[in-house]
Length: 400
Image (cartoon, one colour):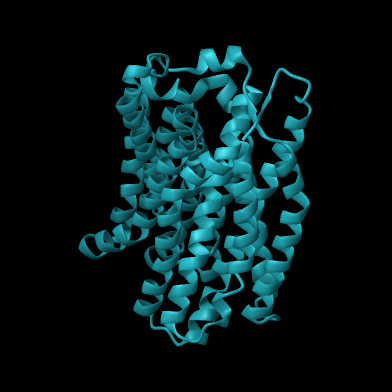
Protein backbone atom coordinates (compact mmCIF):
# COMPACT_ATOMS: atom_id res chain seq x y z
CA UNK A 1 0.00 0.00 0.00
CA UNK A 2 1.31 3.49 -0.81
CA UNK A 3 2.13 6.18 1.72
CA UNK A 4 1.61 9.91 2.11
CA UNK A 5 4.57 11.90 3.43
CA UNK A 6 3.48 14.26 6.19
CA UNK A 7 5.92 16.88 4.89
CA UNK A 8 4.61 16.69 1.33
CA UNK A 9 1.77 18.32 -0.58
CA UNK A 10 -0.75 15.82 0.77
CA UNK A 11 -0.34 16.97 4.40
CA UNK A 12 -3.82 18.62 4.52
CA UNK A 13 -5.34 15.18 3.89
CA UNK A 14 -4.14 14.14 7.36
CA UNK A 15 -6.93 16.20 8.91
CA UNK A 16 -9.52 14.36 6.85
CA UNK A 17 -7.92 11.03 7.72
CA UNK A 18 -8.00 11.89 11.40
CA UNK A 19 -11.70 12.71 11.21
CA UNK A 20 -12.50 9.51 9.30
CA UNK A 21 -10.57 7.29 11.72
CA UNK A 22 -12.24 9.05 14.65
CA UNK A 23 -15.62 8.24 13.13
CA UNK A 24 -14.76 4.53 13.00
CA UNK A 25 -13.69 4.55 16.66
CA UNK A 26 -16.99 6.19 17.63
CA UNK A 27 -18.91 3.71 15.45
CA UNK A 28 -17.20 0.79 17.18
CA UNK A 29 -18.22 2.02 20.62
CA UNK A 30 -21.75 2.86 19.47
CA UNK A 31 -22.44 -0.54 17.91
CA UNK A 32 -20.97 -2.55 20.77
CA UNK A 33 -22.89 -0.57 23.40
CA UNK A 34 -26.11 -1.08 21.45
CA UNK A 35 -25.61 -4.84 21.67
CA UNK A 36 -24.72 -4.77 25.38
CA UNK A 37 -27.88 -2.97 26.48
CA UNK A 38 -30.05 -5.61 24.77
CA UNK A 39 -28.37 -8.61 26.42
CA UNK A 40 -31.12 -8.98 29.08
CA UNK A 41 -33.88 -9.05 26.45
CA UNK A 42 -32.00 -11.51 24.24
CA UNK A 43 -31.31 -13.71 27.28
CA UNK A 44 -35.05 -13.90 27.89
CA UNK A 45 -35.77 -14.52 24.21
CA UNK A 46 -33.34 -17.45 24.00
CA UNK A 47 -34.39 -18.90 27.36
CA UNK A 48 -30.75 -19.06 28.42
CA UNK A 49 -29.80 -19.67 32.03
CA UNK A 50 -27.13 -17.47 33.58
CA UNK A 51 -24.46 -20.09 32.95
CA UNK A 52 -25.64 -20.76 29.39
CA UNK A 53 -25.61 -17.03 28.66
CA UNK A 54 -22.11 -16.79 30.07
CA UNK A 55 -20.94 -19.52 27.73
CA UNK A 56 -22.68 -17.87 24.77
CA UNK A 57 -21.05 -14.54 25.58
CA UNK A 58 -17.67 -16.23 25.39
CA UNK A 59 -18.35 -16.33 21.65
CA UNK A 60 -17.68 -12.58 21.48
CA UNK A 61 -14.40 -13.03 23.32
CA UNK A 62 -13.28 -16.04 21.33
CA UNK A 63 -14.14 -14.46 17.98
CA UNK A 64 -12.39 -11.22 18.91
CA UNK A 65 -9.20 -12.81 20.19
CA UNK A 66 -8.86 -15.18 17.21
CA UNK A 67 -9.40 -12.35 14.72
CA UNK A 68 -7.04 -9.99 16.53
CA UNK A 69 -4.28 -12.54 16.09
CA UNK A 70 -4.64 -12.56 12.28
CA UNK A 71 -5.74 -8.99 11.54
CA UNK A 72 -2.23 -7.63 11.92
CA UNK A 73 -1.13 -9.76 8.97
CA UNK A 74 -4.15 -8.66 6.93
CA UNK A 75 -3.27 -5.03 7.60
CA UNK A 76 0.28 -5.62 6.43
CA UNK A 77 -0.94 -7.27 3.23
CA UNK A 78 -3.92 -5.10 2.28
CA UNK A 79 -3.37 -1.95 4.33
CA UNK A 80 -5.06 -0.93 7.56
CA UNK A 81 -7.42 1.46 5.77
CA UNK A 82 -9.00 -1.24 3.61
CA UNK A 83 -9.28 -3.66 6.53
CA UNK A 84 -10.87 -0.96 8.69
CA UNK A 85 -13.52 -0.29 6.05
CA UNK A 86 -14.21 -4.00 5.56
CA UNK A 87 -14.66 -4.53 9.29
CA UNK A 88 -16.70 -1.32 9.47
CA UNK A 89 -19.18 -3.03 7.14
CA UNK A 90 -19.13 -6.38 8.92
CA UNK A 91 -19.57 -5.01 12.44
CA UNK A 92 -22.99 -3.35 11.95
CA UNK A 93 -24.15 -6.26 9.78
CA UNK A 94 -23.33 -8.86 12.43
CA UNK A 95 -24.85 -6.92 15.34
CA UNK A 96 -28.27 -7.62 13.80
CA UNK A 97 -27.81 -11.40 14.17
CA UNK A 98 -28.17 -12.04 17.96
CA UNK A 99 -31.88 -11.11 18.20
CA UNK A 100 -32.65 -13.58 15.39
CA UNK A 101 -31.56 -16.53 17.55
CA UNK A 102 -33.79 -18.63 19.80
CA UNK A 103 -31.33 -20.88 21.62
CA UNK A 104 -28.13 -20.34 23.61
CA UNK A 105 -26.16 -22.43 21.09
CA UNK A 106 -27.29 -20.35 18.13
CA UNK A 107 -26.60 -17.18 20.10
CA UNK A 108 -23.06 -18.33 20.87
CA UNK A 109 -22.39 -19.09 17.20
CA UNK A 110 -23.54 -15.71 15.91
CA UNK A 111 -21.66 -13.95 18.71
CA UNK A 112 -18.53 -15.70 17.47
CA UNK A 113 -19.06 -13.92 14.14
CA UNK A 114 -19.88 -10.60 15.83
CA UNK A 115 -16.79 -10.92 18.02
CA UNK A 116 -14.65 -11.58 14.95
CA UNK A 117 -15.81 -8.32 13.36
CA UNK A 118 -15.31 -6.47 16.64
CA UNK A 119 -11.78 -7.77 17.11
CA UNK A 120 -10.89 -7.07 13.50
CA UNK A 121 -11.98 -3.45 13.50
CA UNK A 122 -10.18 -2.79 16.78
CA UNK A 123 -6.82 -3.91 15.42
CA UNK A 124 -7.33 -2.32 12.00
CA UNK A 125 -8.45 1.11 13.16
CA UNK A 126 -5.77 1.23 15.87
CA UNK A 127 -3.16 0.39 13.22
CA UNK A 128 -4.49 3.19 11.02
CA UNK A 129 -4.41 5.53 14.01
CA UNK A 130 -0.81 4.58 14.83
CA UNK A 131 0.27 5.50 11.28
CA UNK A 132 -1.51 8.83 11.54
CA UNK A 133 -0.08 9.64 14.97
CA UNK A 134 3.43 9.07 13.62
CA UNK A 135 2.76 11.26 10.58
CA UNK A 136 1.31 14.09 12.65
CA UNK A 137 4.16 13.98 15.13
CA UNK A 138 1.71 14.63 17.98
CA UNK A 139 0.41 12.19 20.62
CA UNK A 140 -3.24 12.28 19.54
CA UNK A 141 -3.96 8.58 20.15
CA UNK A 142 -6.10 9.25 23.27
CA UNK A 143 -8.50 11.36 21.19
CA UNK A 144 -9.42 8.32 19.11
CA UNK A 145 -10.15 6.27 22.21
CA UNK A 146 -12.18 9.17 23.60
CA UNK A 147 -14.33 8.87 20.47
CA UNK A 148 -14.82 5.18 21.24
CA UNK A 149 -15.92 6.06 24.78
CA UNK A 150 -18.27 8.77 23.54
CA UNK A 151 -19.76 6.41 20.97
CA UNK A 152 -20.34 3.87 23.71
CA UNK A 153 -22.05 6.43 25.92
CA UNK A 154 -24.33 7.50 23.06
CA UNK A 155 -25.08 3.90 22.15
CA UNK A 156 -25.94 2.88 25.70
CA UNK A 157 -27.97 6.03 26.33
CA UNK A 158 -29.96 5.62 23.13
CA UNK A 159 -30.43 1.93 23.86
CA UNK A 160 -31.82 2.71 27.28
CA UNK A 161 -34.30 5.16 25.77
CA UNK A 162 -35.64 2.81 23.10
CA UNK A 163 -35.45 -0.47 25.03
CA UNK A 164 -39.02 -0.15 26.26
CA UNK A 165 -40.40 0.78 22.84
CA UNK A 166 -38.50 -1.29 20.28
CA UNK A 167 -37.86 -5.01 20.16
CA UNK A 168 -34.20 -6.09 20.14
CA UNK A 169 -34.58 -7.05 16.48
CA UNK A 170 -35.78 -3.61 15.40
CA UNK A 171 -33.34 -1.78 17.66
CA UNK A 172 -30.26 -3.66 16.45
CA UNK A 173 -31.46 -3.52 12.84
CA UNK A 174 -31.65 0.25 13.21
CA UNK A 175 -28.07 0.20 14.50
CA UNK A 176 -27.11 -1.82 11.42
CA UNK A 177 -28.59 0.83 9.14
CA UNK A 178 -26.94 3.67 11.06
CA UNK A 179 -23.62 1.84 11.07
CA UNK A 180 -23.66 1.17 7.34
CA UNK A 181 -24.54 4.80 6.60
CA UNK A 182 -21.70 6.03 8.81
CA UNK A 183 -19.26 3.59 7.19
CA UNK A 184 -20.38 4.69 3.72
CA UNK A 185 -19.73 8.31 4.70
CA UNK A 186 -16.29 7.76 6.24
CA UNK A 187 -14.95 4.97 4.01
CA UNK A 188 -14.14 7.03 0.88
CA UNK A 189 -11.61 9.12 2.81
CA UNK A 190 -9.75 6.03 4.01
CA UNK A 191 -9.88 4.32 0.62
CA UNK A 192 -8.73 7.40 -1.31
CA UNK A 193 -5.77 8.16 0.93
CA UNK A 194 -2.93 5.71 1.52
CA UNK A 195 -1.40 5.26 4.94
CA UNK A 196 0.53 8.41 5.91
CA UNK A 197 4.27 8.22 6.38
CA UNK A 198 5.97 10.34 9.05
CA UNK A 199 8.64 12.88 8.10
CA UNK A 200 12.17 11.50 8.05
CA UNK A 201 13.16 13.53 11.11
CA UNK A 202 10.36 11.92 13.15
CA UNK A 203 11.12 8.43 11.89
CA UNK A 204 14.76 8.85 12.92
CA UNK A 205 13.99 10.37 16.31
CA UNK A 206 11.37 7.77 17.17
CA UNK A 207 13.49 4.71 16.45
CA UNK A 208 14.68 2.70 19.38
CA UNK A 209 18.31 1.54 19.42
CA UNK A 210 17.05 -1.94 18.58
CA UNK A 211 15.31 -0.67 15.46
CA UNK A 212 18.48 1.13 14.38
CA UNK A 213 20.44 -2.12 14.70
CA UNK A 214 18.43 -4.61 12.59
CA UNK A 215 20.41 -7.61 13.76
CA UNK A 216 19.13 -7.17 17.31
CA UNK A 217 15.65 -5.96 16.48
CA UNK A 218 13.55 -9.13 16.33
CA UNK A 219 13.50 -10.63 19.80
CA UNK A 220 14.10 -7.32 21.54
CA UNK A 221 11.15 -5.59 19.87
CA UNK A 222 8.93 -8.61 20.52
CA UNK A 223 9.85 -8.38 24.19
CA UNK A 224 9.02 -4.68 24.31
CA UNK A 225 5.66 -5.28 22.65
CA UNK A 226 4.95 -7.98 25.23
CA UNK A 227 5.77 -5.53 28.02
CA UNK A 228 3.42 -2.96 26.52
CA UNK A 229 0.73 -5.62 26.18
CA UNK A 230 1.10 -6.48 29.87
CA UNK A 231 0.62 -2.81 30.79
CA UNK A 232 -2.50 -2.75 28.60
CA UNK A 233 -3.73 -5.92 30.33
CA UNK A 234 -3.32 -4.33 33.77
CA UNK A 235 -5.34 -1.30 32.66
CA UNK A 236 -8.09 -3.23 30.87
CA UNK A 237 -8.52 -5.54 33.85
CA UNK A 238 -9.92 -2.55 35.72
CA UNK A 239 -12.29 -1.61 32.91
CA UNK A 240 -13.77 -5.10 32.78
CA UNK A 241 -14.01 -5.40 36.55
CA UNK A 242 -15.77 -2.07 37.04
CA UNK A 243 -18.17 -2.68 34.16
CA UNK A 244 -19.49 -5.83 35.82
CA UNK A 245 -19.02 -5.31 39.57
CA UNK A 246 -19.12 -1.60 40.46
CA UNK A 247 -22.92 -1.33 40.66
CA UNK A 248 -23.19 -4.54 42.68
CA UNK A 249 -20.60 -3.24 45.15
CA UNK A 250 -22.65 -0.10 45.81
CA UNK A 251 -25.94 -1.96 46.09
CA UNK A 252 -24.75 -5.02 48.01
CA UNK A 253 -22.01 -3.65 50.25
CA UNK A 254 -23.07 -0.02 50.74
CA UNK A 255 -26.85 -0.56 50.42
CA UNK A 256 -27.23 2.12 47.77
CA UNK A 257 -30.49 2.60 45.89
CA UNK A 258 -30.42 0.69 42.57
CA UNK A 259 -30.65 3.95 40.63
CA UNK A 260 -27.60 5.36 42.37
CA UNK A 261 -25.76 2.06 42.08
CA UNK A 262 -26.32 2.13 38.33
CA UNK A 263 -24.37 5.40 38.22
CA UNK A 264 -21.20 3.69 39.45
CA UNK A 265 -19.90 2.63 36.05
CA UNK A 266 -21.19 5.84 34.46
CA UNK A 267 -18.95 7.87 36.79
CA UNK A 268 -15.97 5.74 35.81
CA UNK A 269 -16.75 5.85 32.07
CA UNK A 270 -17.41 9.60 32.01
CA UNK A 271 -14.18 10.33 33.86
CA UNK A 272 -12.29 8.05 31.48
CA UNK A 273 -13.75 9.92 28.50
CA UNK A 274 -12.72 13.27 29.98
CA UNK A 275 -9.25 11.90 30.66
CA UNK A 276 -8.87 10.75 27.07
CA UNK A 277 -10.13 14.04 25.66
CA UNK A 278 -7.35 15.78 27.58
CA UNK A 279 -4.84 13.01 26.86
CA UNK A 280 -3.02 14.73 24.00
CA UNK A 281 -2.30 17.81 26.11
CA UNK A 282 -1.21 15.59 28.99
CA UNK A 283 1.16 13.58 26.80
CA UNK A 284 2.67 16.71 25.28
CA UNK A 285 3.39 18.10 28.73
CA UNK A 286 4.41 14.96 30.59
CA UNK A 287 5.58 12.48 27.95
CA UNK A 288 4.65 8.82 27.72
CA UNK A 289 6.48 7.54 30.79
CA UNK A 290 5.11 10.05 33.27
CA UNK A 291 1.63 9.77 31.78
CA UNK A 292 1.72 5.99 32.31
CA UNK A 293 3.25 6.16 35.78
CA UNK A 294 1.08 8.99 37.08
CA UNK A 295 -1.97 7.38 35.50
CA UNK A 296 -1.28 4.03 37.15
CA UNK A 297 -0.65 5.62 40.55
CA UNK A 298 -3.80 7.76 40.25
CA UNK A 299 -5.85 4.74 39.19
CA UNK A 300 -4.52 2.71 42.12
CA UNK A 301 -5.30 5.45 44.63
CA UNK A 302 -8.77 5.99 43.18
CA UNK A 303 -9.58 2.29 43.27
CA UNK A 304 -8.45 1.92 46.88
CA UNK A 305 -10.87 4.72 47.73
CA UNK A 306 -13.61 3.26 45.54
CA UNK A 307 -13.36 -0.25 46.97
CA UNK A 308 -12.80 0.56 50.65
CA UNK A 309 -14.67 3.85 51.23
CA UNK A 310 -17.50 3.54 53.78
CA UNK A 311 -19.94 5.83 51.95
CA UNK A 312 -21.59 5.78 48.53
CA UNK A 313 -20.43 9.23 47.49
CA UNK A 314 -16.80 8.63 48.39
CA UNK A 315 -16.97 5.40 46.43
CA UNK A 316 -18.31 7.23 43.37
CA UNK A 317 -15.50 9.78 43.68
CA UNK A 318 -13.02 6.92 43.87
CA UNK A 319 -14.43 5.32 40.71
CA UNK A 320 -14.17 8.66 38.89
CA UNK A 321 -10.54 9.09 39.97
CA UNK A 322 -9.86 5.56 38.76
CA UNK A 323 -11.31 6.42 35.35
CA UNK A 324 -9.11 9.50 35.07
CA UNK A 325 -6.05 7.49 36.03
CA UNK A 326 -6.59 4.56 33.68
CA UNK A 327 -7.85 6.68 30.77
CA UNK A 328 -4.67 7.03 28.75
CA UNK A 329 -2.75 3.88 29.66
CA UNK A 330 -4.32 1.66 27.00
CA UNK A 331 -4.09 4.22 24.14
CA UNK A 332 -0.43 4.95 24.92
CA UNK A 333 0.57 1.29 25.01
CA UNK A 334 -1.24 0.48 21.75
CA UNK A 335 0.32 3.47 20.00
CA UNK A 336 3.81 2.56 21.17
CA UNK A 337 3.39 -1.12 20.26
CA UNK A 338 2.33 -0.06 16.78
CA UNK A 339 5.29 2.31 16.46
CA UNK A 340 7.64 -0.54 17.38
CA UNK A 341 6.16 -3.39 15.34
CA UNK A 342 3.41 -2.02 13.09
CA UNK A 343 0.04 -3.80 12.82
CA UNK A 344 1.54 -6.96 14.32
CA UNK A 345 2.46 -5.00 17.44
CA UNK A 346 -1.01 -3.48 17.63
CA UNK A 347 -2.55 -6.95 17.31
CA UNK A 348 -0.34 -8.45 20.03
CA UNK A 349 -0.86 -5.63 22.52
CA UNK A 350 -4.60 -5.46 21.77
CA UNK A 351 -4.99 -9.20 22.32
CA UNK A 352 -3.28 -8.99 25.71
CA UNK A 353 -5.26 -5.88 26.62
CA UNK A 354 -8.54 -7.49 25.63
CA UNK A 355 -7.51 -10.53 27.65
CA UNK A 356 -7.27 -8.30 30.70
CA UNK A 357 -10.81 -7.08 30.14
CA UNK A 358 -11.97 -10.71 29.97
CA UNK A 359 -9.93 -11.73 33.00
CA UNK A 360 -11.23 -8.99 35.27
CA UNK A 361 -14.88 -9.96 35.86
CA UNK A 362 -14.39 -13.68 36.63
CA UNK A 363 -11.28 -13.00 38.72
CA UNK A 364 -13.22 -10.51 40.84
CA UNK A 365 -16.02 -13.06 41.21
CA UNK A 366 -13.70 -15.79 42.47
CA UNK A 367 -11.94 -13.47 44.90
CA UNK A 368 -15.27 -12.12 46.14
CA UNK A 369 -16.28 -15.69 47.04
CA UNK A 370 -12.98 -16.33 48.80
CA UNK A 371 -12.75 -13.00 50.63
CA UNK A 372 -15.26 -10.20 49.96
CA UNK A 373 -16.21 -7.99 47.02
CA UNK A 374 -14.49 -4.85 48.41
CA UNK A 375 -11.30 -6.83 48.95
CA UNK A 376 -11.55 -8.34 45.47
CA UNK A 377 -11.91 -4.89 43.91
CA UNK A 378 -8.60 -3.82 45.43
CA UNK A 379 -6.96 -6.11 42.86
CA UNK A 380 -7.74 -3.38 40.32
CA UNK A 381 -5.61 -1.01 42.40
CA UNK A 382 -2.84 -3.60 42.59
CA UNK A 383 -2.71 -4.07 38.82
CA UNK A 384 -2.87 -0.32 38.19
CA UNK A 385 0.17 0.03 40.45
CA UNK A 386 1.86 -2.83 38.58
CA UNK A 387 1.23 -0.99 35.29
CA UNK A 388 2.88 2.11 36.75
CA UNK A 389 5.83 0.08 38.01
CA UNK A 390 6.37 -1.67 34.66
CA UNK A 391 6.10 1.64 32.81
CA UNK A 392 8.73 3.19 35.08
CA UNK A 393 11.06 0.19 35.02
CA UNK A 394 11.05 0.02 31.21
CA UNK A 395 10.94 3.77 30.63
CA UNK A 396 14.11 3.95 28.53
CA UNK A 397 13.39 0.94 26.34
CA UNK A 398 9.64 0.67 25.81
CA UNK A 399 8.04 4.02 26.36
CA UNK A 400 10.05 7.17 25.65
